[in-house]
Length: 325
Length: 264
Image (cartoon, rainbow over all chains, first blue to last red):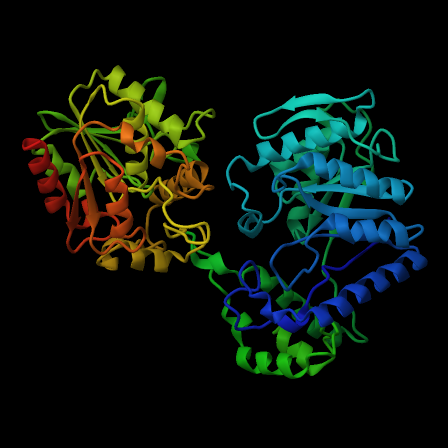
């Protein structure tokens, strides 16, 4: 088993419980660049330590949110490519259906792979629904765009005899010829995330690493469908375990009671997913959960008064407990 | 999503696409192009218009129960589909009326060909860009809360309110299909074609531009400017109506069209 160190590079001081939205529309007046700078450097330091300790690294991206300041997987990976020595560097992932320019994705990933001497793991993701607004990406035919971008990126990485043209439904290029070519041949390993049987089968068919996040008991169905796709593609061996990645949320305490108490705090992190502007605009709507709104004004006052401390919320500190609730 | 909706016996194949089509009444044909919220056979405007016209009210490809061919991705595609439909049904001297998103399609049809049209009616139509690059002419339904959209769209928001907790699964699927199709055709540029305003001069049939006086989705001023781009177009407000005057004032909406057609 391989273990990856993951951080969303959050900006906890702006996690206001009474904000209408923590995503998409939270004004960046709540981002103090001084604090942001300390946080970014702290997260990078933590990954440097992870590298020393023999852990691998996952970087993700979101946009227009205090929950994740990483607006580009590739920028963070570019820093880590140079600064770390041993860790596998996984971007999970690059939302290629939301990128206007997949050729640029291929170029940037190749640079990261070359500088890191072949340590890049490429994660291609569809992206969560609320990312379509900041990306301005059309929320229809997303998977068609995803696979066309994927095909183009891989062809760009594996074509070495000069320019080719691409005239697809979604992307058109007259001359694709990337420099550098990737360090790993024929291309860096491909990952993708999935929580649905259909896309799991597609990933199994291609033999990519499938990552699933917080799927709990559904993870079995997701992985089973991957295995079906793997087998249906005509492979005689069972899918090896290194094709399967799982991210769960774990709370650690000195006693069971403490662990459970912290788990409740961790759980509240997930509620930020529902704390979004468009939460009630869909039929059958996902309403903003009342519990995320508790102590909002109190929290805002505290956040303002503790500016400059620049530390991620710890469940052991009162402020952290309030904010997480 | 169409596979979750019962389409048995409800679709008609026209110009190669199986669509849902309401046809009612006698007399001169009136082709009604619905807004992004779709159209229902129980909408009062259907009966009102059918008293004076042979009313033909299709659901656009991708909306309601109508199929969506994979190749259809733009309002231009819809406009060509309706040109094909008028030819396939051999409609002549057609009164073409479109509301909101349907008005955009109607305008795109009329700049291409008015051969089969006698009159054009645009009600609270979208489709053109008038303001500056930092002004939005049309409220973005994709980033505005539904409750707020209802407030802005209706003179009396109670008329438009949908209780999502109690509507049938079928109606919920149609609601989502309409929304999905709207995103397909109007996502970005949002609800307009940058080329349309410059082509409206090509419309040479008598044109009536109707606008709900309480429309806060697209203002009456936008309507007046739209109207001014079409030679000889007549602009009229409909009182006590918002963005969907055919829903809020089906009687007045119909009367204004009947009067316009009979005297121009």
